Length: 263
Image (cartoon, rainbow, N blue to C red; front, top):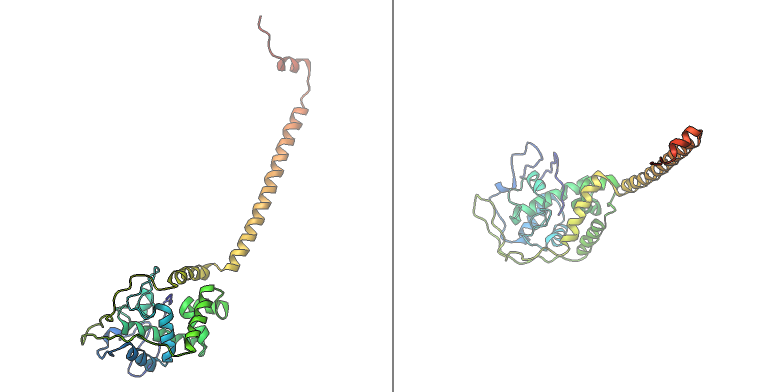
């Protein structure tokens, strides 16, 4: 997941202190850990006020609930958090399902608040970054992001099934991974998502419309330069011709032009 880094984020919840800067608590400080994924999603939903089925739908779309999923661009865990985002959310181990899901829920809560509860915009921001949603005034014109929003909303039409896996963590330490076998291949559709990530990053700097405008101006400049070069060449040729025409072919000049006969 290409969740963008959060600056100075604050999400309030009962018994939890959060924030971008100056935060004193992080997810590694939790000592009471649920025993299953269902429990984690339920706690995350209650803590941040995000619908439980929405959290599950995002997790299914992101990683199919694989705790050790890693994308080529570095997104990690069940909710596919980028390293910088994980740090900003207080997640010290993004492969720990508890920290990862709580972090993803925290970010989704912020996006829902940012867009007044608009789930489509929140999902688009989760996938492509809120800068792109703000820039385009809605879901960005990225094929991957648009497909992502439709995909997650499709999952929301039914009850998302969560794998029945056990989960445990020693008291006072960061939670241990789920008891599932390591993934042997990238998550389906991961490659397309990663390509969209880099496209999204480039669009933050240089949009597709900007690129088309640049290309049009560049071609116009090239065409104008070629016309100028052609005119300059014609002027040079014309000047050379006039120079030769200006020579007075006197007998002396003709003598110089004639080859010298050797005796």
